[in-house]
Structures are given as C-alpha cells and as structure tokens.
Length: 187
Image 1 (cartoon, rainbow, N blue to C red):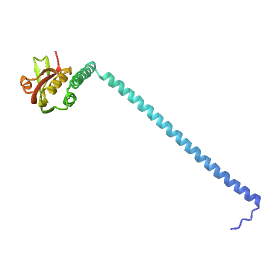
Image 2 (image 1 turned 90 degrees about the horizontal axis):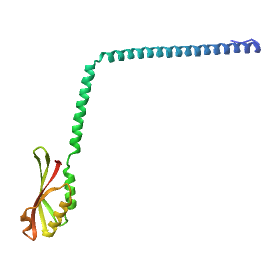
Image 3 (image 1 turned 90 degrees about the vertical axis):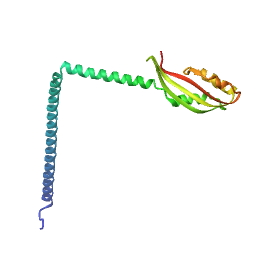
Image 4 (image 1 turned 45 degrees about the vertical axis):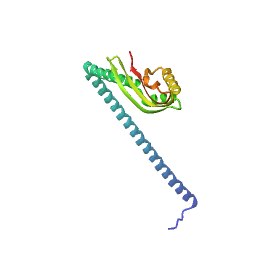
C-alpha cells in the first residue's frame, strides 16, 4: 500500500498516534494507581476490623478470668518459684569430687602416692551432713607423711583429720591410711 499523503499530513497522523498511545498509557497508570489505592484501603479496613475484634476478645477474656483463677495461677507461680529455689540451693551446695581430688593432689608431696580413695555420705541428727573420705597409700619416709598431714590440716574445709597410730610405727616404707570429713550442711 502506497501512502500518497503529503509529509505534513504524515506528521499529523504520527502525532495523533503518539497522542493516543500516551493517553492509553496514562489511563493504564491511573487505573493501576486506583487499584493500588483501593487495595491499600481494603487492607487498612480489614486490619482495623481485626484489631477491634481482638481488643473485644481480650476484654471479654479479662472479664472472664475470675479472681479464683488468678489466685490459682499465683499459687502455681509461687509453688514453681519455691521448687526452683530449692533446686538452686541444692546445686549451690554440691561438692564435686574432682575438685577435692585436685586439692588433695596439690597438697600431696611428690614422694607419696595414693592406693585407695573412698567417700561416704553421712548425716548426724539432721543437723550435720557431709562426706567422710578415707585414703590409703604409700610414703617412703615418716617425714613426708608428717608433711602431708600438715598440708591437710592447713585446708580449712577438711575436718576431723585422723591418722591411725599404726602409720607412725615404721620410719620408712610406710603403708598409711587416713580419714577426714567435709561438711555439706553444718551446724
């Protein structure tokens, strides 16, 4: 098809086409903005409705809870707090055998070695609770055993340190035994 229109008319037609395209584009943009605004208002209205519903539900729930239920909750909380306090005090008063062994190994002279270690829990009249430790071992000389006894006596947690008299009979190659206590709950 041959276009026999003069160039001025061609330009007018081209300008008309551009105007129509721009108009269509602007209408689409306005339509999109209108839809977006409509969606945002719908979301806002829905959110406000849900907020009011939740407030009413909360108010109804608060009114529905009676004083007896609140007291029951408070009693449960107090009971749980009491239990947690007891558990905490139990853990605070634990004695760890590894720490005691470490302390004994630090005060043990290098020439002495232990052959036996035992620990027994004891309770006296529900006022005193603790652990009684019994140790036995080998000391090459009486002087090193005396040094070990002095080191044990310096430890303030070790109570009632007892070396039997048979430990002191031989001057060398001594198979010794001893006992001491550590109080957990003292008087």
